[in-house]
Amino acid sequence: MKKVIVAEDDAGVQDSIRMVLEDAGYDVTVLSGGESLLGTEYDLPDVFILDKQLSGVDGLDICRFLKTQGRTKNIPVIMISASSRIDMLAKDAQADGVLEKPFRIEALRDMVARHTA
Image 1: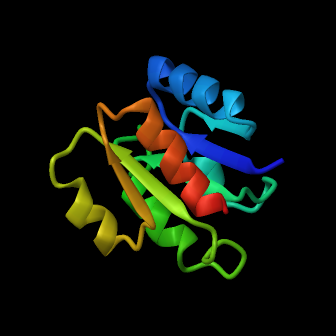
Image 2 (image 1 turned 30 degrees about the vertical axis):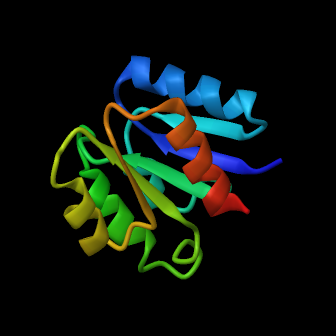
Image 3 (image 1 turned 90 degrees about the horizontal axis):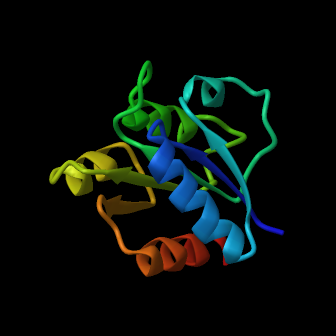
């Protein structure tokens, strides 16, 4: 079973992402913040989904960090945000994919499938 780690601080968005991806057959771990991703105390996923606007640490900073670490640099990172500039910001942070909120369920499912194939 493919594993997804989601860092998102909005409970409603967390529930939606979890439900969609679990229904599609993924093992989903949801984090309310991203600080724990700056360490090594978690099982590596097949893909990360990071909200840009997290409390504490910015999702783009987490993405940049993950892309510089030997153990996570090759794991796809999908950024999600309501910011209209997220495409450019995510590209600068070396994200592998971007979804602008609100996004369609199919778009989320398709992007995760593409990055875990």
